[in-house]
Image 1: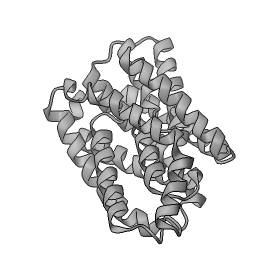
Image 2 (image 1 turned 90 degrees about the vertical axis):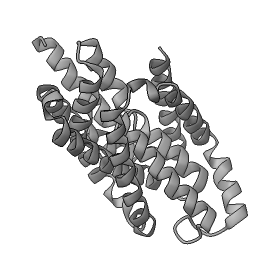
Image 3 (image 1 turned 180 degrees about the horizontal axis):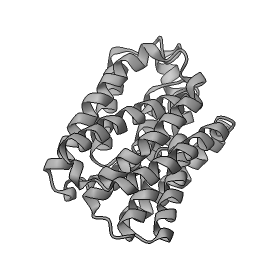
Image 4 (image 1 turned 135 degrees about the vertical axis):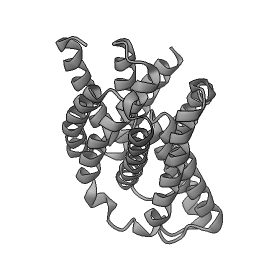
Length: 257
């Protein structure tokens, strides 16, 4: 790569880190950038996942206050994300990339629809169940939450792009707590998926990773994750939801294009 291309990779990492902390589709910036500069798709996927771990750390740390009180739910979701990420990483290393190509746009459209309808869905959930999200989840909603978290973790371990939007759509359909708290949980679970995927790729396919690219994305995403969490925490629910939808539509366009 030329010096200009390396700089653009780092810049893409910064943007991806910021967007991941707010929305969770930063890969839709870095992945096409790497492909445009001639990095093979599987190498780009693995190098990108490793680089974005740094941004996940800074983004999760920035939202640490919103994580308070969520442990009763997260202690079940974290293992689900971990197990899903292991399965997704295995799929990436053993299956053709075409397996999920048709499914990804459909999942993204579904997630964006859930995000847009979140207020109405939450009102319906409250009427049906009552109470708050942490203390009143019935067996059906608990099952849907854990299975959904596992499924998104599998997807994230395989491709990573837009897993945050999928998680926010899942949370909006099941939970009733504030969207900023949901975003904090999304950042933590996405970080776990990325860490598992990064470790798996490093152990199994060390020689297929472009470590220069991974390092540049790591530096950029570390700064971007802090910036995104710092300013994202100030957004109103409507503004944050709008950002999620806009970025998701852009990502959908890029996936289909």
